[in-house]
Amino acid sequence: MGNLTPEMRLIHEEVKELARNYGLDTYDVVFEVVDYDELNMIASYGGFPTRYPHWRFGMEYEQLSKSYAWGLSKIYELVINNDPCYAYLMRANSLTDQKLVMAHVYGHCDFFKNNYWFSKTNRKMMDVMANHGTRIRKYMDQHGVETVERFVDSVLSLDNLIDIHSPFIKRDREPGEAPPMVQETPKIGAKDYMDRYINPPEFLEEQKQLLRDEREQHFRFPQEPTKDVLKFLLENAPLESWEQNIVAMLREEAYYFAPQGMTKIMNEGWAVYWHSKLMTQHLLQPEEVILYCDHHSGTLATSPGQVNPYKLGVELFRDIEERWDRGKFGLEFQRIEDEDVRRDWDQNLGLGREKIFEVRKIHNDVTFIDNYLEADFAADQKLYVYGFNERTRQYEILDRDWTKVKNQLLWSLTNFGQPSIYVVDGNLGGRNELYLYHDWTGVDLQFEMASETLKNVFSIWRRPVHLETREEGKPRLMSFDGKDYEFRELSPSKEASEIVGTESGKEGSQP
Image (cartoon, rainbow, N blue to C red):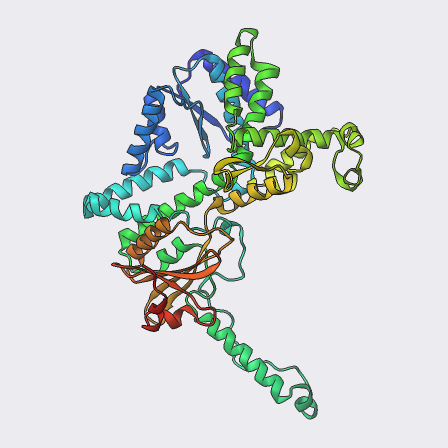
């Protein structure tokens, strides 16, 4: 399969054999050779050659094409999580680059197949994307291009309002399913003459209240706060059938792409690890070394104040491999305080390769950083906290404390660094108004973006929408009724349903 030249086909066979000998396990990999314009087009579609028509794809294509034409950027590799895996090679690249890309792709394909966070993804997504495109084109023919594209815009603006962990959660019952209904007040078994002592009236009243609470919980809408806002809208918003289908399709695509965002550092680091090993130990010819080093170093280059996932990922994998090869882990090693002893510690365990395969299998970026980024690594890699200094009015290094570096990385990676929003009530005050809650972690919302989000939620829910958040630690309520926005202070002593839609609630309104 694919359209490789005979020479590139031989390189592919060599790379495949080397990858298997090292223990990489992939689906079949199909390489397609395309020119730069075709590659930019496929990249603008997120790596899929066929998608639904939408202006954002054209905008992305224009940006990629101009960036390539002006020499600002160049796409070296593009690979799709699919069975088989599809990867694209630019026809104009040198053979050295083609070798590098093939080796890099095999690292990605091994990661796609074996990392747990990709285990719930659809492995036939190439076909699914094409089907989605066909169906949306059909809706455009039926309902008009502008109408459908406007609705697609609204849904796409909300495609981050999903619960990225929900595919891995096993529930005793599905959301919305009724809990077992107990017909009688539960009592402790006892003989008749002991019943009034074993089950006194206050105990029975307590059990009745618990039963009432359970039944009331069943009738809440939703029963408990849900993070998958798109699913809630799909199931409960007053949508036409074609609109429901579009929400379902775009939500499916959002869940397909989510693991890539959850494992960006690991995935790229793993691919760099393997392309560097295969190239330097097997594939490179002497005359190719300089070109390879130039392109490889460009991949790992890091700008001040930014995280390069390729660099951070590969260096952390190498650090883990070295530590487990030398036995620099466990309680005995952690108790060593002498820096010279720690540096020279080597038990020759040789467990590094086994360990990095284990890490590749079970972790995502958050757990990868949380478990394996330590003080020695942060110092070796010269990691620091970068930010704006209010005193000097300049961006500069604020701190080199490795724990603060780690915490800032974890904060930026959790939920992709985006706010966590939950649906709390779909029938606020009995008026079918939607109540959302922002799980505030010390960082305020960007209110301009939050306002647009409320507007797009309203376009799907079609009733007023409210969002509880905080501004500088103070409770705030944002509301949109289809025409006007309102910003109000929330009193801790009152529920939102008590102030929404009342005149007294408008006392704290802000312009």
